[in-house]
Image (cartoon, rainbow, N blue to C red; front, side, top):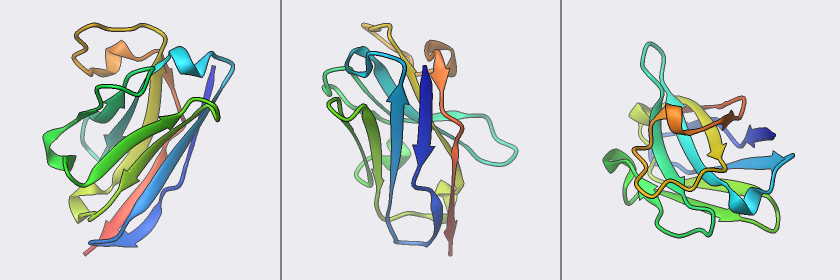
Length: 125
């Protein structure tokens, strides 16, 4: 399984970016997917997650109303639309996936089996 993330970059506060993650080597439509991020000196943290069928998206409180996670199973692609970006959103963003359908996920890194290489998002003030 390979996950290839892209779409990061440098943007001013208040701007937008859309991250993409293309999956290969797996039946993407059966995978529980998520975006994590890791800022310098910080632990990797969940940002958003989405079930295999696109239902029940989860967001960490700090991004609710600003970020939208979505997926296109026909294109084996996961997205993260990020609006109204803040300097605090600066981090390396990782996509992650697992074929396990957790009934009550805790969205920890241990629940995800496969990881993309990360894409840098930098938000200037």
